[in-house]
Image 1 (cartoon, rainbow, N blue to C red):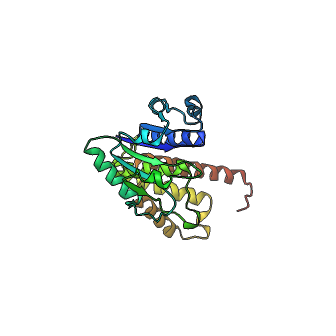
Image 2 (cartoon, helix red, strand yellow):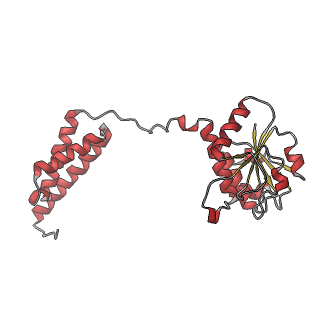
Image 3 (cartoon, rainbow, N blue to C red):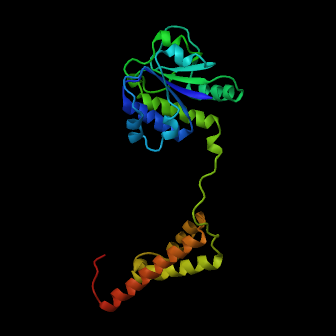
Length: 250
């Protein structure tokens, strides 16, 4: 089990953003250590549809109590420390956490400090690993919720989220047959002729380029049908305009 631990968070909005990020990435357990303010109903008003995460939030008076049952603790800091630490980047930390979590045992904690001070050296002494998220050294301090989001994303990658297929389109379409493509090219040629597009351009060259564009896709049957409908309407409009003998400045 992977738990997110916020040590003395100061801003309820930041807690709400963390809750929302946890919902986004499938994390379920949040521990708050001495939060300055925490009201579940207010957080739900910011992070909608997160009742399941909020129902599992636990609060603790001290960091020692919040980490007591954890077997692996990863602390996050933006500041470089002179003390010798087991340092990691988020991706390496995520891979290790996921590997340890798969082996069973107790909770794996991701520990984040308060917005204005971060984690103290004493807090980091409780951590098995210390992670610094690489950023511009002239402005290294990340928003609390942003730091949590980055780590949760890295955990999702380590758990193989990228292998999930994209959502299938609502309406699948068959590949376009050559016969339909030829009808499309004929309709496009008529439409371009109707608006005098070939007046100063080589028709064969233009249509050859159109074929290259269509074949690059390739287009499916529904797309061809839509493009044909567009070309036919252009042709009809051009014909109506010609019959009206109105001058259109091009």
